Length: 233
Image (cartoon, rainbow, N blue to C red; front, top):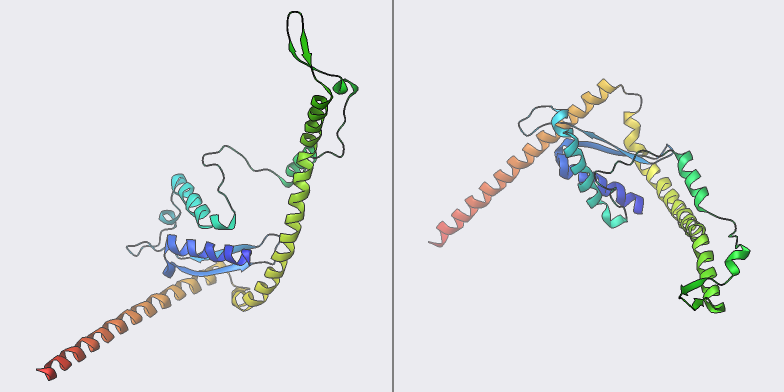
């Protein structure tokens, strides 16, 4: 359910950014390792020109797109990365190496850690830890040592549950979208472009037809209103 809403919000963001009439198709692919959405957008400018450059824009426009998109999926618990961050791509291997460094199978307490520590030292006297203070310090050290392990275990359990739910959604959506993706299989890029442009023309024709029908209905309504007014006089 959450994945379906994610793709729905993504499509809504595309329609809001580029215009609903310019988004010819938005297809969800679940036959690969990572489900993703492919959108076919006709880069038609407001003055009727085809310009992919104006649609994509420069670096600042891309940053703005990342921010507005993150806002559109914010309610799903997703957050935008730090804007302007110099962070680089991290490989899967490096990610798991980091996780392994952050987890511990045991926490060792040295004999020195059991000795009372000096809390405050004066000229003639000094305050040292009592047994309660030592126990508190060691408990804190153990909890801190296992904090990463506990967090990863909790995250793994949540991810496993989420993965099962997403798998069910993926299976259901795959069946529903089979009829949508099937007609596009085996087509070349040129053929795909031709079909998309043709679909765009059909959309524009339908919109123009609907517009004319609305105008005609409004004219008929006004004519009837004037006729009824004349009868009353």
